[in-house]
Each structure stands twice: as C-alpha cells, then as structure tokens.
Length: 216
Image (cartoon, rainbow, N blue to C red; front, top):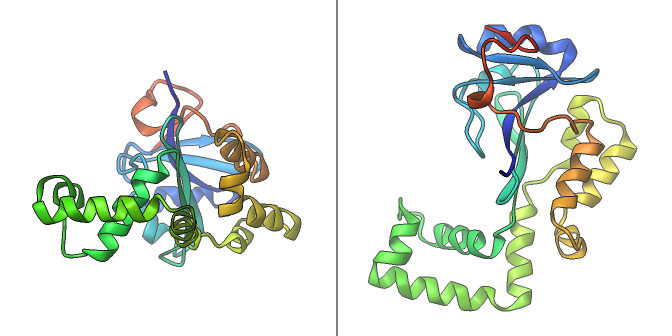
C-alpha cells in the first residue's frame, strides 16, 4: 500500500486562527516543535481547500501532498494568494503533454477528451508527443513548469538564508535530471523544512476517537 498524504501546515504560534476559518470537523495535529498540521473536508489530493485563501490573509499556509507512486508537491498561500508552488510528478512526460495542450487550446475544458476522442485533438496529441520526444524541448517545458517555484517565500515561515539557498537548489529542473531516485527529492524537501513526520495523514484517514488530534 503506497502513501497518500495531503494537508495544511502552519507555524505553531498561529494555530489558534484555524478555528476562525475552518469548518466543523477540521482535525488539528501538533506535528512537531515548529509546525501544526490541520486537515479539512475540502482538502484534495493535489489542491488545497477553499478555506485557505481567507486564512492566508492573516498568516501564511503551506499545503503539502505526497502521493507516493504518482507525485508530490506544495503550495504556499499568503495574503490571499497562491505565491509559490510545485507539482512534482513521477509521470512528467504525460503530464507535460496535457499541460502544453491545455496552454495551446485553453477553450478545451476537458483536455483529455479533446486529445483522445476528437479527430483534431488526436493529431494535436501526436504533434506534442513528437515535440517532447526531443530532449531540449522536454527540458524547456520542464523549466516553464518549475518557474512557479519561489524558494524565497519559505522565509514566510521563518527559514534562514542557508535553508532558502538549499531549497532553491533542490527545487529545480537540474535536480530532476540529476537525482537517480526521484523519491529522494521529496525526502530531502521534507527534511529541509522539518516536516519529516508529515506522512500517512489525510482527512479521510483520521478517526474522531484519535486523542492525538483536536477537532473543531
């Protein structure tokens, strides 16, 4: 059974605010001496809930997910906006194809259906697939994907310059190509920001009888 983890993280001294913005049933967990994790019914596998936008007007929120066999990623919300984020897929070849197609055909609401069922879409699929088979084109598409990373935004959580520098070096296209084992990247990320214990947690797995959690 592979790990499916997703939820929200805030600094411990901001945890009291969770009750002001999150719905009844939200589970709150003291992750460690730095972080408090909380989990809401609106959390999804790769996307934070709608509650986080308002919450982040007061304090920054880090959304983290790790779907062990598929992908991992993070989102930093601050001042009501998504400021820095990364979706790291173990299936980048196919995901980038969809991303490129969606960018070129924004009018297509269901891009997968367009690519696999529409005659024009099938041709588009083959064209983009051929483009991305070229190493330089694939790397260029990856660089565009990684452009959403702003490592300096981790300063919002009190991290010092040496950690910011290591994050900036880790969350790059170069890292994607250099690491022999992709799963080592998320392990290093978790270690750098002290969330190694953020594992096997998600709203659906939490029992109200679990005394380690507080509930709204």
